[in-house]
Length: 175
Image 1 (cartoon, rainbow, N blue to C red):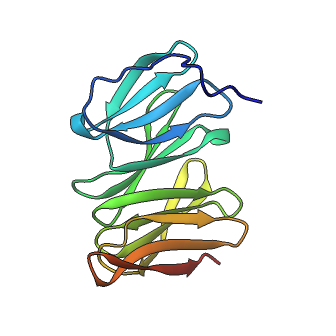
Image 2: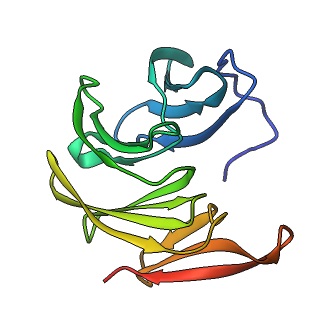
């Protein structure tokens, strides 16, 4: 059992707006979206310290076994793949604007991105160094919040139905 009543420590990032973290399972790093400074903060959770930064996209997800970080930039929308070992760019492909959530389906080697412009961008990983845009699936403008359920092979996107406060899920099957 974990005792959650005890404060274990802090990891400080000098930013008023951080979000969208990705944890490295086989190592101590955490990748944090620092939106205020348009960068990714790389944190060592064992040292509890910021160890690096790199220019920021809007959202990210990891392919940890292959040391790949998938990013989607906010301005000039691009899907970008970085090597998490040396920080080098591996690939860059066009995306749709306003990326919010990004998911990696390791079994099917696909990366799915929901966007504010109303598209689900689906990228294929041919191998860790080669990627392709497989589909640009229309959903609905404003459909950003999403979740991928690998057990069902379903990608759900929350989209406005009749106005800003009423939402219905949009479903995409990733065959």
